Length: 156
Ligand SMILES: [Zn+2]
Image 1: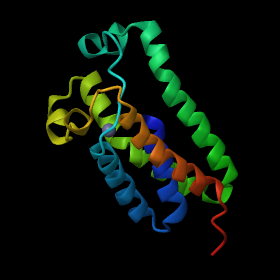
Image 2 (image 1 turned 90 degrees about the vertical axis):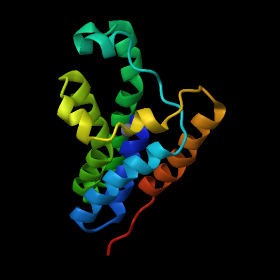
Image 3 (image 1 turned 90 degrees about the horizontal axis):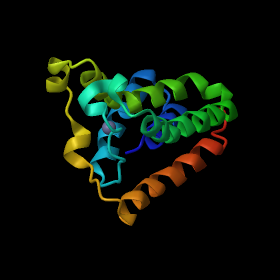
Image 4 (image 1 turned 120 degrees about the vertical axis):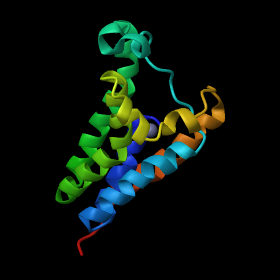
């Protein structure tokens, strides 16, 4: 799914699960579960797959960075609302997004060994159709995540 969804679900896991190790495990698993659900993903930035960041079309790169950028601002705001859980939320969000970082590094630095060990999950499961359903599945995950992040967890 798109970056913002992975970050928010990871933050939810961080906020509600108490053990750091369980947060890391569930956050990583959440990535693959979410990518398994059919969803719309924007295509790679023009020129990126051939030439990496330096070969990417600048206008297209900026445009496609807007959503992840918005996601990070939103996440920062939600962490601000949950100051007492800031650390586990950041850890959860990071590991929920981590598989995409590995795929990005494998691509960017042509790490063939990395491409072999990290499942190219995105390529296998997502569907590129700009279908209503592909956006709807992400909205269905987005709304409860936001609610869980705004709601007060309460002290325990
Ligand atoms: Zn992914």
